[in-house]
Length: 375
Image 1 (spheres, rainbow, N blue to C red):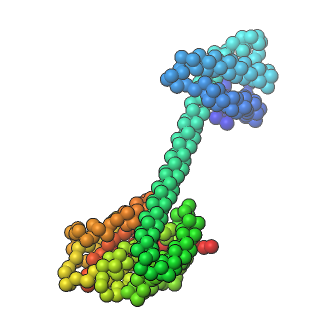
Image 2 (tube, rainbow, N blue to C red):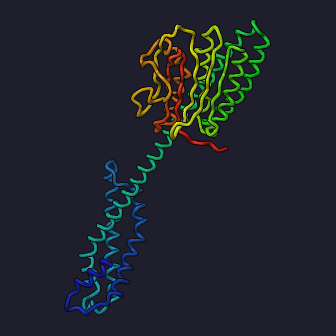
Image 3 (cartoon, rainbow, N blue to C red):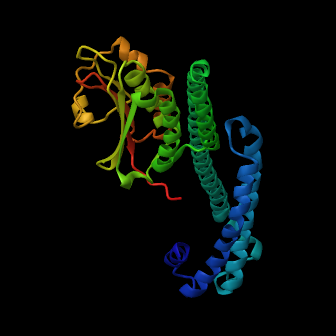
């Protein structure tokens, strides 16, 4: 359309007046040539890229192609206009007519070729960048999945070794109890091995795994172990990292029951908090004279200026590390922290905190974003 208007406005007054419609049709035929040529130009651009390393080889090829395309464009334009509007040629010979078009249209044709070449190169570059970003995102996701699986498999032998050690202690003291523990251990391992490649499971399934583990500990400790469950039923389908609660409960049993002469209590709480959720495992701690113990924060609790803000309703006594708290941060809790970073890299809600309570116990608070898994 622009070319049509330009030809009409630039018409010599001595030439006969031309209708817009025939001019538009003739120019449409000319520009269809460039539309048909575009895929070929882009193919040449991909085959002979104009890059610094290949410039000496590619540039002459494109220069020759541009001249050929420009020549065809100029000659075809001259012939189309000559045939469409013979009255405008007058007595001018055909060769002179074509020569005039070569003077004006050949440079335009060369420029159009290189313009198409540049557009194709820009589109290819954008496509390559997008593919590179997608590839990088896939690699990052695969790396995160590999990290989660590695950490998950790290937790399983850690738990297995501890349990086998406990069974070994019972073999001579109480063989029937050791047998019951082995049966429970077999049930538990069947579940955990089936979930090796599953990063998240519903809380309901995680609690089922935890029940098998607690069955082992109940055989081991008998009446000395008391377990209280406070589970919000609306969270049973919420996604949690696979095998995430067992290390927390194992820590609670180790420091809240094993270290006590009398009975010990472990509380397991699941509750919604804002748009997320919290899994809390509390123990009574070792029997002490009421000395205050420190709190150590694992992970991050964004937006909280103190542990009171991070975990409402709990009263940490301080933030300095102690020998006792360092002992609790074994492979299990370190792996949980690393798994949170791998599973939820952009989720500020994902964190793990150890809170030392005034009564001498400890509360492990696992904060997670809430997302349901529907079977």
